[in-house]
Length: 397
Image (tube, rainbow, N blue to C red; front, top):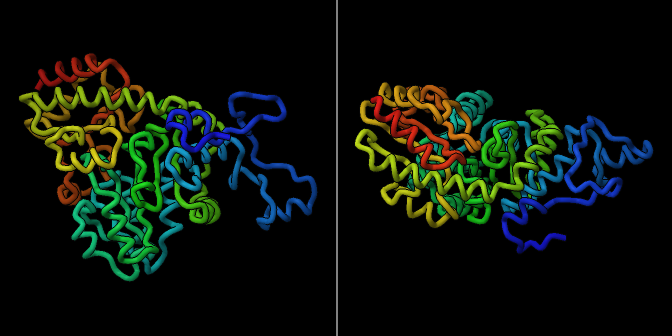
């Protein structure tokens, strides 16, 4: 049995693993099956009644997926984890489990575009009230809490402007008002290698596992981590009934492979991002750099306290605004113009017209997302080559 005091890298490789009693396979096999055989009708009835553990149907659970869930739960310090077919599948399943008609959610205004759309245009259609605020402002959190508040939802670092919110302070504020309020933190930008919101008082962690957890740009997946009873509700209601966003066994196999190198990948992502941020911060043609590792970042001190390192994501604005920023993006050779993040390749995008196109111009401004903001996912190439490509592109504007 794995010692719970083992290091992160050891857990990423060994947590949740079971011995293959049939063939002795070292690597977790892919159980590519939709259904599972019962020994008897009575056994099937017991499993459906929850009186006996065991697999029934892959929409409800699968051995390959279950091992991955146990691993992610261990890495986040949670009692349990539910895997989903996408990050939005995980977020939707969690929020549908928490919220319902007549309930109220406080959400940060700075969110991934599809999460913002779910909260702003989706849940509100079904009687859920949502207030978008700046969760880094504790007075704003306090002033918006009310009797029917069921959740406080935030990202930190936030997508795409790397805003930092004090998770512990928000959790204490929400729970002091009502211990039943779920504080939900999207930990995608940091990954469990750099930040563990549950240890800071959050109730639920969600991930787009497509990003750093998988790390290879070849799987779409998501995770919900928290208490065992809550995750059971997410699995049997939010996932089974409301979204059907079930992870398939082959995707789970690929993510299990990716997790083995998460710790060392994150070290390199952080190392490269610091060098790139420092370079951009000295460029005459760069208006502003958004990276929590810079001491000039407004959330630097909080990030230094609640994160193990500052991550591989940064954003920046160039002088000349949106047009100049888009010209820079179009002038790159090595860096790839694409959405997503956390891949080995360095990826760049114009947030307002891509990942955050669900925001209106007014909503972008209110959420602190400049129209010309360029988001950069710093990859695993040599930092000198990433910087050289940015330098030549900057010379074009």
